[in-house]
Structures are given as structure tokens and as C-alpha cells.
Length: 372
Image (cartoon, rainbow, N blue to C red):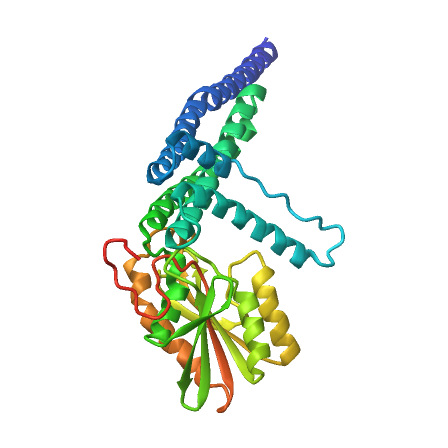
């Protein structure tokens, strides 16, 4: 009789445990499929509204017919670039460069119609604003795709993936929205710190165009020739820095050092505006421009030094924070110190890397309410 009672108790406990597990699993599924889905749906909808808002912001700044402007902005938002074939890596840099330049030309062609101008600061800034529109739209479409796929297949793992991606994507969307506003107002962004340092070093010296959208100034530093290179401003422009440096090295022939100055991604806990120095080419491009500098430096035995101003990925796209502006002087002094390490009677090239929106070529930037 006792054995029967013990067995009955064990069975009851086992049944209770199994039922509890089933109920807990059902609760989890209901929570993720209903509560979590609705929360994610709300976040995705907010991103969709930002996507719509940034497109309308660009349309309002257009000088063409509103219907035509909306069509062009939609075309820019839905643009895609097919990556070059990588099965045979030979010549991939040139093929990648060709695709990047073609995509830039597409955005500029839309910007010309939207601004009613052939070239100039407005075209440059509108083109860059369209790239922000494109970035936001890609994220909005991708999140919507993941959400609908999770709903269609009842995929809890996909909902969890969206939950993990959302914080990063929300920051990315917010920064690009603020970046689009900065471009339309011709206000420097965080990534403009490299050109700002270059403009600080150039001062009032005259500049000349050495490559499409890229200028250089010549100065003297204790028996050394300085060639300071940056993208042509104050419109939103990245220049052709790799080609420009390669051309200057061949033109002068006595280049002993190349110093690149650029914004760099900080680690969590690092202070925004921290200035660091290193070795190599500080350039956050896909690789086609930095490759040219590395190649000519290796061929000619030229030293490669770098100065980096630390900031987060979102700060690089948003209007430049004060802590980054305050770091410009220190970065300029650090670049000059590195230049003094080069032999006398040689040439040092200093490259201000980054988007030169709001940064003139040969005078210090002075904010005047967003005018270039």
C-alpha cells in the first residue's frame, strides 16, 4: 500500500512537472508572438515614418516640380549596387572603384535635377543628403522584411534576431536623419574633422585642384615642403584622395612621408575627441582610395603615419560635436610633429580624410548658421 502511494505521488509530480513545462512553453510562445511582435512592429513603424520624413524633407528643398522631386527621391532611395565578382580577385580594386564612382554619379545626376544646377555646393550637399535617404530606406525595408517573414513563418528566432538588431539600427537611422539635415544646411559632420584639420593647416595659403574634387596647398615647415590635401569644399564631397596623393608623389619625386588624418571609431568608454597616432593609411573607404596610397608608398619607400580623432559611428554622421571641434588643434599639432620627423629638404604629404561638408579649402571654418 505504501509503495502504491509513493508511486502515485511520483506520477502526480511528474505530470505536474510536464504540464508546467508545457504551460511555460506556451506562455513564451504567446509572449514572443504577440507581445514582442507588437513591440517590434511599433519600432519598425517608427523607423518607416522617419524614412518617409527624411524623403519629404529632401523633396521640400527641391527646386523642381514636386511630383518629379518625389519620383527622383524614390529612385535614389531604391538604388542598388551589385558587388564585383570576387571569384577572381585580380583587378577587383579597379572594378570596385568603377562601381563606386558610377553610384556617386547616379546620386549627383538626381541632385542636379533636384537643385536645378549643374555643379556647386548645393549639388554636392543634395547628393550627400540622398545617400542618407538611401541608407535609412535600406534599413527600413530590411526590418520590414524580417518582421513580415517572422509573422508569416511564426519564427521566434527571427523575432529575437530583430530584437537584437533594433538598438543598433535605431541609432543608425537617427544619425543618418540628422546627417541629412546637416548636409542640406551645409553644416560639418563628425567625419568632417579630417578636412577641418587640413583647412586649419592650410590657413590662407592658395590651393589648386590636383584631382577631381580634390585640392592641395603647398607650405614650408622648417626646411620641409608640406603638401596639404583635402576634398574640395565647402560642399559635401569626399574627393579622390588616393589618386591625388599618387599624382603628387610622382610630380614632386622627393616625398618621404604621407600623413593621413581621419575620424576613427572609438571603443565604448573612450572619450569622443581623443587624438591618437598610428602607422598606415587612416581612411574609412571601401579600400579603393587607401589602396592607391599604400601601393605608391610601398613602391617608393615612403613612410605612412596616421592621426585619428576618436568618435562613435553615429557621431561621425551627425553634426560635429564640440568635443571633436576642440580636438582639431591637437590633431593639427600632432600632424606637424610627425612631419618634423621627416628628413629636411624632403616633401611631406598631409591628407585630411573625410567629408568636407561645411569646410572651406583655405580659410578656417566659421559657423554662420549653416551657410558655406
